[in-house]
Each structure stands twice: as structure tokens, then as C-alpha cells.
Length: 138
Image 1: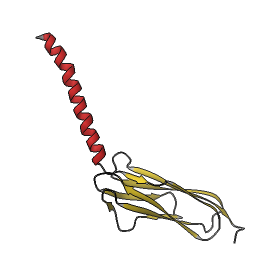
Image 2 (image 1 turned 90 degrees about the horizontal axis):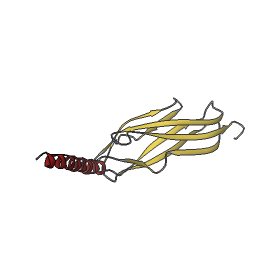
Image 3 (image 1 turned 45 degrees about the horizontal axis):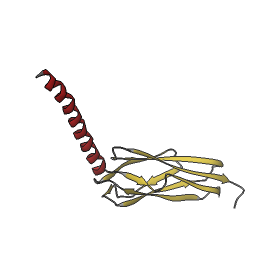
Image 4 (image 1 turned 90 degrees about the vertical axis):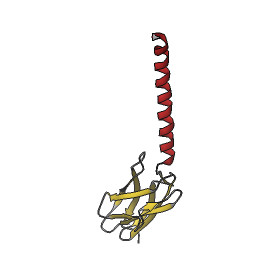
């Protein structure tokens, strides 16, 4: 009887582990999943003064509703929004609209935007914009 228990115990552990893995795989496929087409954008060389804008496009590649919880910018000169829409269904697309004010700035600039979501595997995505502000350009 002890031999049977010694053999069955490891088998039960293996079956239990496989069951957890398949449940976890199901949850992974079902969970919301934010996917950006790109996370970095370079405006290149720009004049001092104008406000620059760019839209980072994303898609919910998961099975549950994706929630945009919060968007944080690294500087007061940078703004970012998804507008009034905060929920995205499966396969639905959206955009994080970013603005950057070049007034009073000069040289190489790098600004980060943090997008916080309910994606359990990627809850924070960092978007980056860069540019080189040249005051001599009109």
C-alpha cells in the first residue's frame, strides 16, 4: 500500500500542476492585453516655440475589457490623454494623444508618458518622445 501511495502522490502533483498551468494559460488569453504599435517617437530637429503632437496607437489584444486607469507625464511641458474613452473591448483600437510644448526649451529633449492599465501582465507602459530643439530654425 505504501508503494502505491508513493507512486500516486507524485502523479497527483503532476496532474495538479498541469491543471494550474492550463487554467493560467486560459486566464492569460482571456485577460486584457494592451499592445502599442510603437512606444517611442522622435520628432527630429524642430524649431523652438511650437507645440508638437503625436498619437501612440494601441489595441486591446486580450479577451476582457481593457481599462486605461491613469496617464502620467514626466514634465509639465508634456500632456497626454485618451480623451473621455477609458474602456476598450477585445480588438478595439485607441490612441494616446501626446503634446509637447517646445517654448523656452533648447537642445535634445526626452519625455516619458506612463500609461497605467488593468493588463495584468503589462500594467504600466512607458511611451517616449524625443526631439532636438534648435532655436536658430524659423
